Amino acid sequence: METASLTSRLKAKARELGFALSGVAPATNADGFPRFRDWLARGYAGEMSYLRTQGDAREHPRSILETVRSVLMVGMEYAYGAGGVSPLCAFEANCADVSQGAYAPRSGKLAAYAQGPDYHRYIWDRLNALAAWLEAEAPGSRTEAVADTAPLLERDFARRAGLGWVGKNTMLINRRRGSFFFLGAVLTDLDLATDAPFATAHCGTCTACLDACPTKAFPQPFVLDAAKCISYLTVELRSAIPVELREPMGNWLYGCDVCQDVCPWNSKPREGVAFPHNAELAALDPIELLGLSADQFRERFKRTSLWRNRRAGLLRNAAIVLGNVGDERALPALERALGDAEEVIRDAAAWAIERIRQRYSNVNSGLPSSPSV
Image (cartoon, rainbow, N blue to C red):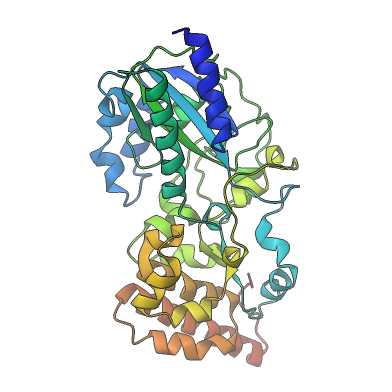
């Protein structure tokens, strides 16, 4: 079978399945593995112990498929809107209310990738279909489809497959598509036609992403301290969020898009975004969330990305958002949360109550209040 023809048809199948980007890299050692090991050694992984446990496995994709020879990297867009403006701010009235320190029902912001179905399952289903197509086209071949959870340095192989460069905010950036896309891979023992690696970077002197980060999570360009990143704090962290990072979180309830929203490469209009969007997940009511039982949480969020940090994490985040918004009308819900079975929820609720009461005490006494979100 002619390699170039098979590779071309494979990429066409990827587009048919919703992947806007595709490219092939040879299966060799990951270029960025030494930097990854240094990143781990500097403690930037926070409590994500699985990154350390699976650290050595990320050196070469043979840890996933022993006979691998080629890695097809694909990207599926998930962004909505254009002009570098987060789709969350389509709720202009709510954004304005929050900026004035007043409570708005849908004041809890979600990152764009979480405004749809659980992306893991959605991407896996399509990657598995792509892998099955390749095995049918090349009988006897072996494939393995992976996304996000496998020990693969995806951005390394995406760059080597020609999909883009790694920006100063550590996101993979494509000149035509920006950075709002999921990455996935199909590993195969076939020798596919490889693409030229992306050998240049186009961030120039721009530091917009570094300057805009609310928690100052970038100790230097191209390096992220995940332990300070709002996405890590609201999604990956299971314990209490450090007190000094709570106020900078603002009203981000789940994830964060700040470093992508301000990136000039995300200012172009986007069309044909394949990942489904659920307008009901664009922003949520943190007071309503605080009243959810375990069963109600399961029923509402089981099929979404919000299921990842479970009820305890989401309600912890909701309490912190309410503390940052600073409206007294949130106090009854927060006071009820003081009796929750989960310690992290009780801790966050107590912090929020103290913050709101202090704010109104300062207002009544004529002293400056805490900065509003």
